[in-house]
Amino acid sequence: MWSRRASRLVLDRTKSNRAPDASLAYLLAWNAQPVAAFSNIAYAMSRLCGGVLAEIQPDLWTEQKMDFKLAVVGATGNVGREMLDILAEHRFPAAEVVALASPRSIGTEVSFGDKILKCKALENFDFSGTDICLMSAGGTVSKEWAPKIAGQGCVVIDNSSAWRYDSDVPLIVPEVNAEAIAGFAKRNIIANPNCSTAQLVVALKPLHDKATIRRVVVATYQSVSGAGKEAMDELFSQTRAIFVSDSVTTKKFPKRIAFNVIPEIDVFMEDGYTKEEWKMMAETKKILDPKIKLTATCVRVPVFIGHAEAVNIEFANPISADEAREILREAPGCLVIDKHEPGGSITPHEAAGEDATYISRIREDATVENGLSLWCVADNLRKGAALNAVQIAEVLVNRKLIAPKKKAA
Ligand code: NAP
Ligand code: 2RA
Image (cartoon, rainbow, N blue to C red; front, side, top):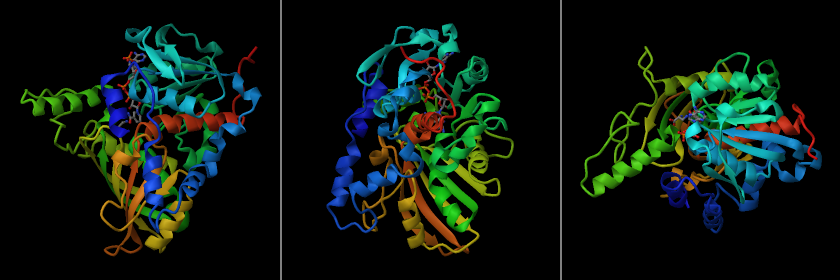
């Protein structure tokens, strides 16, 4: 399934949709064994539907809510396509969904459930009748367009970094700080965090509530889809070129990514950290707790979909590995897969196409007081971007923080 989805994104962007849920088979396989760390599928599903995620169950929608009109900006991109898929999967209560991209994509067909939408150009679109705009077209487009769209009374949920650090814009991961969404009214803009931050704070929040995190040291292993559709093409074409002894062309990445790892993501800052590393620190503070110290090393790996993170955490109070495992099993959005034998951990291969933040390798770090280490994996296009944005829209609707502009006929 992973390879089918990756090759769809790389080779054929005109068709949809997600392949059937791969990890159901994976979870069944796990369930067939006496796995201490992961009991059964019903349990897994109840975990994912717990807490804030309970708000997204379609059964909770009412007819009245079907009046919302949505726009997806960046609908031809990796994140935009995933947003359309998730809106359809969740049966988001929308009377209409409009696909928008650059003028290059006018007429390009994208899937929305069993429907096909024809893309329109963002620059020609009138947002005055639209309630929610899910935006994933990069920072430059967001800087220019988000205030214009918001000014027309349409709430923008933005995936770029353009608004994340603005004190008048809430930065939201619904499992962690859904209550902060109410602050959107100042600018009519809500920011979605960077993909590497989103999965990290989902895992950190329940542990912080229990034992108060003081410091986090994280190394990331980030897939190429995090850098957009052209980056996926680059991994594909470099891999192919190497197999057929052709020359390798490098464009999106600073070095060859095929059969390699690159210890830099985004631009360098003055202190030697990269912007990606700075984002993880700044966003964790804004979403979770400004007192948490965090240092990151962000690394690009030749994987199409799924970001992994090796996380070391120091707490103010004692917490054992067993306690952490139990807490994470109960936490919304988290699934623990932690079997202490070969293959007993989750990898991006299994997490691709899934909604959960998976956690493995939970163990005590005896080199510091109150230390734990763990491994955390999620689909960067889903929890890292599109799913989180749709969850935010669902909270807006379910908490009645917005009302549809127009009633459906
Ligand atoms: P992508 O695959 O390169 O897609 C970019 C999208 O933006 C395309 O639909 C493109 O339309 C559209 N676009 C570009 N210029 C435009 C313009 N002037 N007007 C309207 N639309 C325009 O990128 P992506 O991976 O989806 O990422 C999109 C955003 O989400 C970025 O800000 C990224 O940082 C953020 N994000 C991504 C991830 C991730 O894991 N990928 C995670 C978190 C956040 P055309 O096809 O017409 O060019
Ligand atoms: C990356 N975090 O993986 C970025 C995407 N926003 O490049």
